[in-house]
Length: 631
Ligand code: PEP
Ligand code: MN
Image (cartoon, rainbow, N blue to C red; front, top):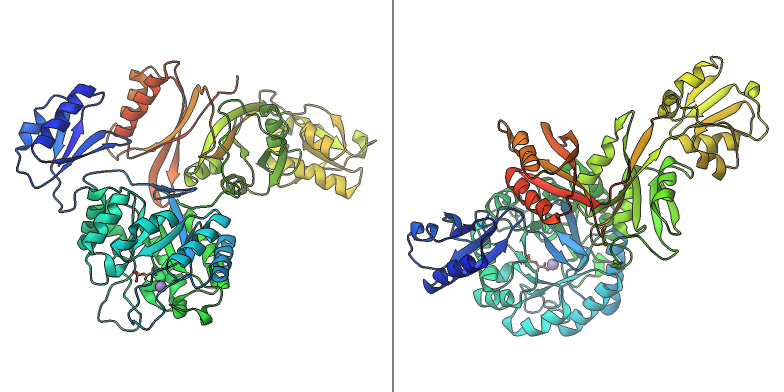
């Protein structure tokens, strides 16, 4: 049964409830969830629910109807997200685990790791103890194999996964692997489940060859009951009457498990099909069906593989699959998990003071308004890294190529830049750590020595041209040419080297392209400001004393749902700056709400308010806590 505790329960009451239930013979597990704190009480004890409901501090008691308790969605509403080194699995990420079926030699696993890492896998797999159908088949390199696997994982900063086949190996395996795999053949080896569970390490639990989904969840229950919460379920195909494929990959298990359990589920299309050509389509289908990731066998030279060669992908096939997954993920509102190139450096919180190697990405060419915003935000040396698309700025931050990215989110005249709001939701491992508002001043930029009378043509972004309409109205003979960005139009006229061309852009764009400003501040409305946000990878330190928060949420589809959420802000006297709705990709006519709010001096009030908002919403995320830019 699940005992939901009252918000702000006294420690004394909490202990009383725990003691009361333990005396009755229950095992208690406390979960401090995003929305509420609960006690999960499991055991074969008959108790009248009302007896618990009457204890001080108990908000409500919910019986769990399923035989698996701790693994059930009834026990925990939110998806479990598992952190393994630099990788998070679950939520909105697609995690790709890849590597050979078996570790065959040091060279082979190092080469496999290099290949899969280069294509974008974030974890390395490789069996050292192989449960083979034939006793005459290769049984694995055992401890040596684990050593080689660990070395390869460390070289590429990838956590490693390997299968355990016996309780005797528990102590040994824990020193070598980050995730312990329990294979299909051992899914119901209960002694093994108990021992591995007690280790507390993350476990990749594969579905048995003839196991029902309920059997799989019961096996997970064993692991949780004995000590590990970090379980990744894996659908890898079951035995059916079909013989064309090695197993029948039961993709139905994904939505079923998602409904029944809070645990993440990945798919193994390699063992699920047994045929190389069938692996990429089933990998994509798994992701489309809602899997949190895949585990795939990839071999540097599959013809020479000592086990499962026919189902192992060639390196080129894996590279292509990764590109396809990258293209598919945003359609599902998800993002492919990436490894940072360098281990994350936990810097000092607050003011950003970095070495001269600090890199900041922005969209556009040198001299873009984003670069100007960057200049006024960072008070230290940095290297601006231009990117062609907004999504590239997110990618460079996620991969660790740059520590920060800067992006425009709103213009005081033309409104929100929606694409960046959508990207913030799609990249759960990126957060906002700062903002900067700058005034947009447009200038007429020309080749040195040019006079107004020489000009025949003006290039700029359509917004730039539109924002200078009054000035341009004085020169009706000039041809107005739309260009993809303001700073880029300056670089373009610099390249054309003709005095008949002018461009409209920032002062910086004139400076970096060594051109001249013929007329300053030609924008029609001088009250033209753009707000930029500074993003970084989730693990990096944030702002020390934030006074502004950006939040995103979805509400239940019922009358007054949004009103109710805003009421919570009002009741707690939290000032809201902005409210905006955006369509949810893939859910026509459903909307996400973005809120910017103040963080009061007493930050506890803010965090308590957030807890209440979480209860009133279906999905809730803090996009970032930061210091507001003045005016
Ligand atoms: C494996 O992943 O190498 C393996 C043997 O898988 P399964 O247990 O699913 O057969
Ligand atoms: Mn295999």
